Amino acid sequence: MSGERWAQLSTVEAHVKLVLLVEDDPDSAAVTKQILERNGMSVKVAKDGGQAQSSFVLQKPDFVILDLMLPGESGFEICDRLKHSDSSIPVVILTAIDSDESRSLAARVGADAYLTKPADPAHLIETIQQVAQDVWAKSRLENKEVDRIRFHCICGKRFRVSAEHKGRSMNCPRCGEPMIVPS
Image (cartoon, rainbow, N blue to C red):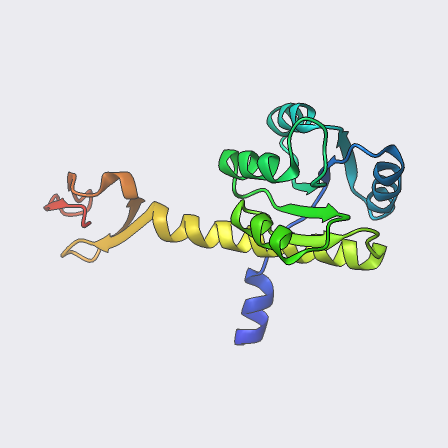
């Protein structure tokens, strides 16, 4: 099989079905929700950090779009909390604030992208798709590298075990040889 064909078969796209939209302005929320729904996504709207947190925990969205100016707490605080809860869910900031300081702080609290209002619908959808793919690939790569240890017995039997088994002893089921899972 050619390398190109193998790459096509082994590449899986991240699909965004449920979006949590954290926006307190009803008009802005309605416009953004309409854009997303026209592109096949379901949208749950939260008006503040409390609603965002409960929706995030109860419905586990595929994607979060977050305004920065919200009642009670800022979008920066919400982003930080959501990313600490589950870093594999992409968060895009969509705000009227267009400053380098704001972009920098958003990146520090874990935002995966930063867009300013009003967002071009095509650019918004393209950004969602790209960010979802990037975050999905990054989380799979990190999990693949951290979670598994590969090694083999002297008889040739190959093993792939969880990283939590580092340093533990085991016997090969093929030859009975005792061995220790490498670190």
